[in-house]
Every structure is written in structure tokens, then in C-alpha cells.
Length: 107
Image (cartoon, rainbow, N blue to C red):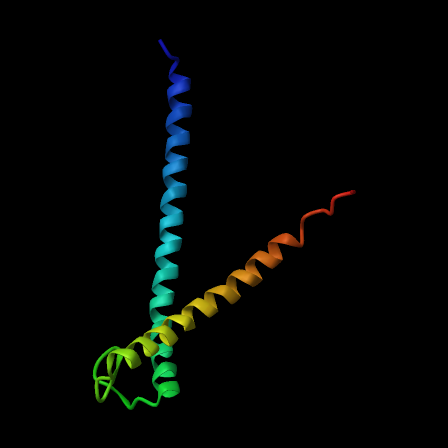
């Protein structure tokens, strides 16, 4: 029969693992929320670049006249690029700082 200490260690490791998974999921949800909020300035930039007149009717800016399918695709592409560029820049700076502390190899 297994000792109680083994079960306690296993339970402790399980709780730590579940906690880490929940922290990762929370971080992903926070980043998705930030990216969702970045879609609003992305829409404003996209409407300005494509020359579509827009208005505030609620939480998200809407075009005054609905654009055609190709213009809608262009607006969606420009809008999605704003959070993607900001995420790329943030990851570049975060990963660059991580690599500075590593020692150089002696080869």
C-alpha cells in the first residue's frame, strides 16, 4: 500500500499543474480581451484608409453606407493587422529582453 506522503506529494503536484494551466488560460483570455479592444482603433484606421464614412451607433463604429464584399474584406484585413502588429512588437521586445541574460557559449 502506498504511503500517505506519496499521495500528498502527488496531490500537491496535481494542484500545482492545474494552477499553472489556469494561469495560462487566464493570460490568454486577457490578451484576447486586449486584442478585442484594439479592433476598435483598427476599424477607425481601416475606415480612414479606405475612405469609408463611419459613425458611432453603439460600442463599435459602423459605416454609414455598408461597403461591398471586396471593400469589407479590405477593412477586415486592415482591422486585423492592427492587433497583430502590436502583438508582434510586444513579443519582439519581451523575447529580446529574455535572451540578454543568457551566457554566451565558449565555442
